[in-house]
Picture: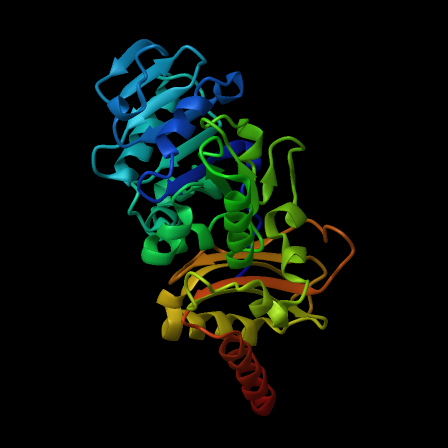
Length: 352
C-alpha cells in the first residue's frame, strides 16, 4: 500500500465473480440453472469440466476444445489447470473477436478450494488485474448437509466466512426449521453476506452478482452495498448469544469504526504490520477510510498477505465520513487488531 489512485474506468474492466462451495453443495446445479437465463448472455463461465454440468442441450457452437458458446449467448470455458492462463487467453479471444464480448466472468472453484488463491490471482497477475476486477464471492451451502459440513470441514467454514453472497441450496429437500437454523448460523458467521435460498438450483442472476464496489446497473460506485457495514452494528460485542462460533470458534467478523480522520502513515503501517505478522489470519478486509488531509474517501480491499491498491472515491456515499473497516479473521482477536493501530498512532505521535 503506497499512494491512493483513481481506479480505472468501470467500462474498461470485466467483473469477475467466484462461485465456491463445499463438495456436493450444489454448485453444478446452480451453474446449470444460471446458464438458462438470458441475463447471462454477456457472461463467460469458467468451470472445471463441461461434462459435469450437462451442457449438451444448451450447446450451439464449439469454438475450440476449451470453449463453447451457448444458445443464451453465454460462453463456457473449461479450466484444465491454470486459472491465470485461462483468463488471459479468454481475454485475448475477446479482443481478437474470436468470442463474443463479455462483461462478466464467473469462476467456479472445486469443492475443497480455498477462495483466497483465486482472489490472489485476480490481484497479483498484472495482465489480469488490469482487465478483471473482483465483483464478489458467491458461496453455495448445502441445505441438507451444510450444518454437518460446517462442523467437520474447515474449508466449508472459510468459504462461507469470506462470501459476499451465500446461497442455501436444496431448499426442496430440507425442512423449513433446518433451513432457518442453518441460515441463522451462517448469518452469525458472516453478518455482511446476503443470504438467499434456492430450490432445484433456481435463482436469478441478479440475486448473486454485482456485489462489488462498482454497480453496473447505475454505472457508479456503491460503497454501502459493497461494504454492508451496518450488518455488523447490532450487538457486535454480544455476538455469543447468537452462537456465532458454533461451527468454528476461530473465525471472527467485525467492523471497526473511527470518528476522526486517520493519519495516512500510521494507517499504512497498521496494515503492513497486520500483513507481516498475521497475514494468513486475515481472511478478508474491506473498508472505506477517512484519511487526514484528504476530503475524499479511500477504499481498501485485501485478502491475507495481498491488498489491492487503495482507490480514491469521488465522494462520500451517504454523508457519513467515519472510517469503516470490515475484518474477517481467523485466530486473530479484534482487540489485537485495534491495539496495533493504536500503537502505530502513538509511535508516530512521539516521533512528531
